[in-house]
Image (tube, rainbow, N blue to C red):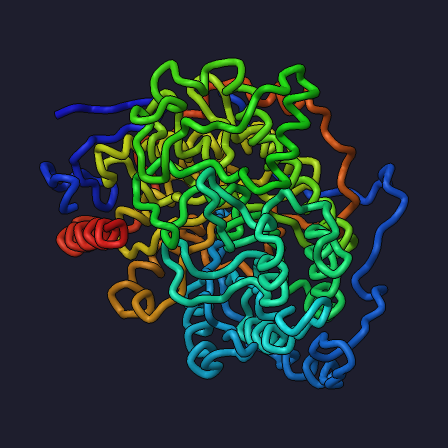
Length: 609
């Protein structure tokens, strides 16, 4: 049988590994440098060149209640009293050196935990589940804070009431919180179970000016989110898109001041595109995309077309146009002139376009994160940005699916490290997906390199001295998936004498559901949490495992283009062990895991058909 080993990752194409052991071989797909990352040190209180620090308590609030304009509720004091109940201390036992290996675990809440009507769904049932998560040692939860719900009634008419109720409940259950500023619609992506569009008044502007949305070469509009082409164009009742995002985040800070003061929130992930990810909506199931299609470039709205023409003219090529030979969403790379071997992407014109296309995405993310930094200045939390794990066609020359999404990544060009370098300006977390995936689980015709992709991206983040976090892309409940996440969380294993060589900042599990809470699944999940914690008890004090958060300072100076270009140089990733040394289980769960993986693959194929 073929043995594939690349960049420190070992895989077998059709061999099943459960609980860190090879237990089954022959299941076909259709059923189934060297640079040490330094230990975080507690920051000192020496002064910096930034002459200002803000404390959340100094921000004047427009409304101490729900955050709605002109509709005070006066619940701030009562709320604080409600969450101040004394809790009996939980006895814990720590091995201090091993605590340095602790990776906190968060769980994503259901997409519709707050309904379209801005109501907290099933508070009693949610409270029960949150308490079970806390009892399992989970460190916190993540929630989408939907733009389409909070600002649904009109420009700058914010209603945070349901999210305040939710935050109070999370705090009452002794969990930490990751909040996503979700400027995209819910619905149309893999795993979306509810539909939450962007605000209707924004969609109405799109009726008269449909070019505010991303557009493919055939003129088909994607209404998941606004095109980055309108980031700085005042089309929205006098505001630009970035101004709308900025106002939203400022209102969030003002309305959630008490939660920020109490340090309930540990990070704010800023939505930067479809599914909240920094990418173009190149693959959309609602528009007919099917895995493993290469997707389509999304830059044919009038604003981006004009921007490209201006850039090409400045470069001395006014005759250059946007690509017209990149195929359609469900094509393969070799079926297109642009992506085939020695295709257009290798020419001067193709390289110019791909550089422009990916740079626009970088600028988009940088400008919005700069506004987020201003909004949360002085608050003790970190910003975060999410990058998609587009693993299909990774093992081809053109990396077509990554290119259409805006990641200019080739075998000899790193498309992710420039993103990491940009994020370093804002001291932001780099959040990556598909941590659970292994190559042997993917369709052979997809030319997937999920394991190599994760290794490349995480290594790039660490080289840029970023804190790197991650998620699983699909819901999984089997030991094999948990063990792959554990491997990626500590690629070189634990260090019994102190910090490991490499360690992720945190992992967020997708997602809380009735299926997760079923006894068998939840028992395995609890073991997974324990292993993520390096077999240590739940630790409520992040400083004990070297996670320190200071009041947010102003972002550093913009990074020169030359420095971003330098980051595209391909560098060998850090080495990975073949298996985790903190395996979730042994042979007792082998049969259940084989069935779970087969079911997972069947579900993937059903979703793709």
